[in-house]
Length: 279
Ligand code: SF4
Image (cartoon, rainbow, N blue to C red; front, side):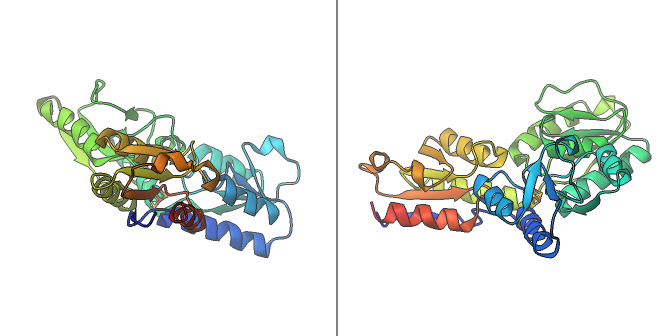
């Protein structure tokens, strides 16, 4: 099988690449007691490699006695949790993505300036929980076009990985009730890496017979890619590694598109492409 199109920008985004480089760098410099708060990325293979170097993920500091250094992953963590960890005396290596940091700072600034912060995103996502913690007591997370009652002065930001179409839909809903507001401030905190990957994935998915989406089954951005392809109507398989490839998927298939989420290392993508080429 030779007709394979790899989506431009598939795989690690800037923030994930940076967080992983930081984690490997710390592993080289420190001897023991290094942990990541939650897996550094949603990729079991990378997490395993780091474990071999002595960097293990923990969900909570109560799980481990020998903590010296804690690495914060790209999604960031809530403000109070970060402060609590610093107080406990751990060395904190903050690998929060600068784009997520920007959303956190804007949330804090808007709150201090008296705006009710409206975050468009998924309230259960760790990134949103982090941003929310900077946004003050009146902050709300809006997940759908069902918009709750809002204050007269609002400041709107977005979870970095939200699809533009959904953000537009929610913003339109708010603007349609403009007469209910005194002031609306809108900041773009969307991440271009995600938007571009979604856009290039859509272009490829519309022109192939089958899409392979590579990335952790628990990765929100990979699932978003898979859902986008399915919505377009192309046969789509979401896989984590080469072992899941099934020869029967490719029967009568002429052109295959390959995309990957932000947590998928290049070597996993290469391995899968090589395997498909040999079918
Ligand atoms: S998707 Fe964007 S915001 Fe999220 S970690 Fe990657 S670069 Fe940062």
